[in-house]
Each structure stands twice: as structure tokens, then as C-alpha cells.
Amino acid sequence: MKQAFRITAFLLSLALLAVAGFPVLNAYGAESQSQKTLVLGTSADFAPYEFHKTIDGEDKIVGFDIEIAKQIADDLDAKLVIQDMSFDALLPALQSGRVDLVISGMTPTEERKKSIDFSDSYYQSNQVIMVRSEDTDKYPTMDSLKGEKIGVQKGSIQEEIAQNIPDAVLTSLDKISDLALQLQTQRVNAVVIEDTVAKGYLSDGALALAAATPDEAPVQAAIGIRKGNTELLGKVNETLSRLKNDGSIDKMVTEASLLSADRVPPSDNIFSIFWQYRNYYAAGLGYTLLLSALGVLFGFVIGLLICLLRMTGIKVLQWLGSAYVELLRGTPMLVQLMIIHYGLALTLDINFSPLQSGIITLSLNSSAYLAEIFRAGIQGVDRGQMEAARSLGMTRGKAMRLVILPQAFKSVLPAIGNEFVTIIKESSIISVIGMVDIMYQAQVVKNITYKGLSPFLIAAAMYFMLTFILSKLLGVWERRLSVHDRR
Ligand code: ARG
Image (tube, rainbow, N blue to C red; front, side):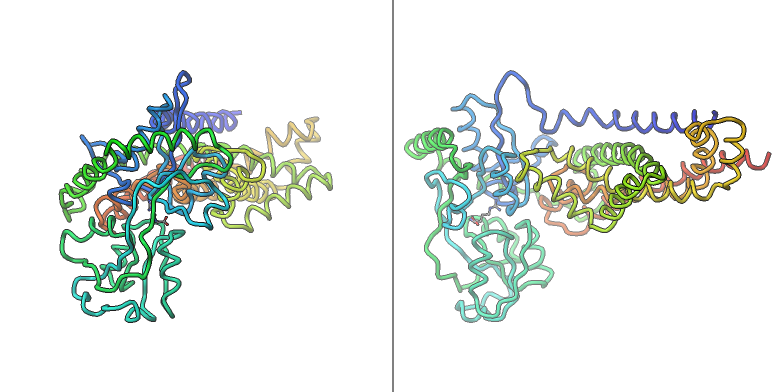
């Protein structure tokens, strides 16, 4: 009985922990019922188009694309909600209806026009080759880039341009700031990038433009809209033509460029980086706790159900339970996440938010492991226990609940603890779909500071603290439980 009480208390405290993480929910994706929203998808790594900037201690996404989006939202009398994601996730996000429009310096290519519609263009730029300053003379022509290691943004037209350089070895990454880092650390020797964006990286003198320039006509930027959404397309074009005619766009570009040039060089000291961006990490911590607490909670319940299913003695149920466990253990969690977040949206029109997809993935994934742990525990309880309980007149279910499960639970507690620690760490995977957890915030801080190490060391320290505290707590609990054994 006491045991059951303890388990309930434990689950309750987990739920409390989850609820404690809840207030952060309002900061993210929440929408007021009264006003309609316009959800903008963008990849905020593209100054001066769109980029992260700390304003009054808070992380803001700014840039001239964002200013244009605000005008469109105003004209539609809608509230603008910005979703930051990797550039190559924008098209699927638009198609699956997760965002209403994409403004991300996107070039309206023929290929893209097959899957989405584009507005009139609002800006024009040229392609350049960015290299380390000491290498500027090394690349006088495009031919000199033959066989070179080249960095590009994944899914961008720059990727295609680089693919046409003979024998080039490409590194395609999600974020432009990663490319600058790759260049500085000599992992690639050149980066194909737009001139407007390259400017932002040239100021401190480490990087420069090569004389070689891709043989490309200037490219346009246009706004992506879901195919067939002609109403929004018309409205967007109206706003664009107003902004172009009254010179607003030029003004927005100038202002955004000034804003992005006004970068206080970040300190090299890890402690001051942490202090400066503590709000980012604190917000991330809230989501990591929420994700793992709910993942553990639901994983625990589903795992127990699956385990009992496998022990019913009914063939079909046993088979279903085994199939569940094998499938979930035999496929990577990242793949499961993609299927749940994007796959379901594209095929069945089930659109989970990043938080929902994250909790579902973590719960399902951990339930498979927990089911196995529970099974091992139950099978480890001496057969005689069930026989004794049954001979006292208990039903199978009652014997399971009162005699077998408590003993099983105690013996597998260390294994369950390990699983919880794993979930906290694995929850970092959810950052790839835009869940603003510790890992995601570390990447944001990296994008702002252009520092590749400190932001992640801070994240590592935070994850370590969480898992360390948890395993200590579990250790205490385990010792408490074993006290009864000695009596
Ligand atoms: N104009 C290029 C393209 O359409 C690159 C755009 C990248 N945009 C960004 N926000 N990172 O492929």
C-alpha cells in the first residue's frame, strides 16, 4: 500500500514539475482568440534580411523581411507570429500549413514554384565567394575553386551553384553563421553566399571576398505562399507594391543593415556569455524540463500498459505489444520525430506544434524502453509470489497490483532512473523542429555571438546539472526503499 502511495506521489510530483514549466508556454506560439494570426516562417540567420538581436535584454527577430511581414500583418489586421526554423524546413512547413507565408530572402526558382507560389519580388542581390582574408588572392576565377572544399546553406540556391563547380566538395549546413565558423576553422575554404549577407561577416577583417564571383544573374527575393492561396497572394502583392512605391523597402533595408552592423563584439569569457544570455538559457531550461517531465510521465504510463499487454497471455495482444516495442526501439528517435512532426502533417493533415510533437515522440520512444524494463522486473519476481497471492484468494489483477508490481518496481528502479536521465539528454533532439529548449537556445546564442564553443559548454553544464541532480535524488529514493529489505 505504502509502495503504491509512493509511486503515486512520485508521478504527482512529476506532473507538478511539468506544470511548473508551463508558464513558459505563453511565451511561445500562444495566440489570442480575438485576433487572427499570420504565421511567418523564416530562417533568422540572414542579416540584414532576418536575424536575432538582443534588444533590452530580450531576444528579438529583426530585419527588413520582418518589417515587411509586419506591414502585411497590419494590412490584414492580423497578429504576426514568427517561427524560426532551418532554411530547408521552410517549404515543408508552408506546404503542411504550419506557417502561412515564408519571408526568408527566398529566391523564386522554377523548382520551388512547383510546390509553392511566390509573390512579386521585393529585393535583388548577387552571389559572391567568401574566403579567409589571407586567401583572397588564391581564387581569382571560378576555375580556381575546382576541387575546393565549399560551404553552403542547405536547400539554398547557393547549394546548386556550388554543385556546378567541378569536383567541389560541399558542406551543406542549416545556418549561415555555421558556415562562417567552418570557414574560420578551416573546415571549408570558400563559402557561396549573397553579397548583402556577406557584408555582415566582413567587418572584423578575418573574412573577405574573393575576386572570383559565380557567373550568375542577380537573384530576386520573393514571398512564398501556399499553392492556391490566391487571396493571401493578392493581399501580399498589394502591400509589397505600396512599400516599393513609397520607398519604404529601401528604408527598411538601410535600417536593418545599420542594426546588424551595430554588434557589440561578444566577450570571450564563458561566464560573461552565460550572464549576458541568461534569459535565453533560462527559457530553454523551462522547455527542457517540461519536455522531459511530460515525456517521462506519459512514457511511464504507456510503458506500463504495453508491458501488461505483453503479459496477458492473449496472443494477438502479446504480438501487438512486441511489435510496438521492437519498432520503436529499432528506429532512431530523430526519424520518429520527423514522421510525427512533418509526416503526419503532410499525409493526414495532423498538425502538432513543436511542443506536442516533442512530447509525443519522447513518450512513445521511452515507453518502449520502459515496457522492457518493467517486463524484466515482473519476470524477476519469484513465481511463488503469484501462487501465494492467488492461494490467498486474490484475483490475478489484484495480485499483480498489490504483490508483483511493487516488488518488480523496486528491483528495476535503477534501470528506470537511467531511462529518465536518458530522456533529459535525448530531449535535445527536439530542438531540430524548432522547440526552444536548452539546445536550441545554445544554437541561437551561437548564431548571435559567432562563438562555437562556449554556448555549448554552457548547455552541457546545464544538462549535466539536471541529470546529476536527478540521479542523486533517485539514489536517495532507492536507498529508502531498500531499508524495508533489511528489516
Ligand atoms: N536566396 C537564397 C535562396 O533562396 C538564400 C536564402 C537564404 N535565406 C535565409 N534566411 N537563410 O536559396
